[in-house]
Amino acid sequence: MVVRVLFVCLGNICRSPMAEGMFRAKVNAAGLMDQIRIDSAATGNWNLGNPPHRGTQQVLTKHGIDYSQMRARLIGQDDFSDFDYVIGMDGSNMSDLEALQPLDSDVVLKKLMDFAPAEKESEVPDPYYTGNFEETERLVSAGCEGLLQAIREKFDM
Image 1 (cartoon, rainbow, N blue to C red):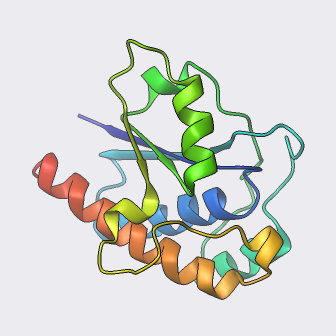
Image 2 (cartoon, one colour):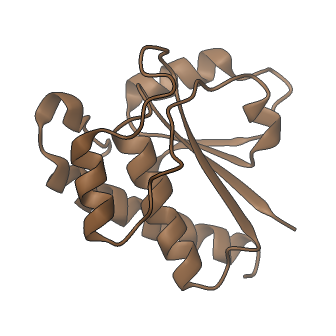
């Protein structure tokens, strides 16, 4: 069985590609790349086709993560059947995702920080506006670690 995870943020150039890359690195380190498929998408369409933001590129480069193939794309209704987990970054993302989610979808729809209960933050702030890519990196890393642990426990990996 392959577990499919989609990370979603507003523009798919900052938080969700950072989560995609960092989660992929954690999955790879755990030896689970053949069991977990990872992608990212946007709820808004203004960055479609663009690579990750320069700040996200710097974070990913620091971790040795290749982002050369990452391009912003828009989430579609098919994603709710193509993925097992759709992971938003904040309440606004979640509202958009809930509005898009088909009624018959059984996807797990959660915020990334739901998987990091030890963190006081319940959302990953958008560094496009805050400029604080280091804080985003810290929160994304914690959320990805918790998500991987939850998937490993649920699917006995």
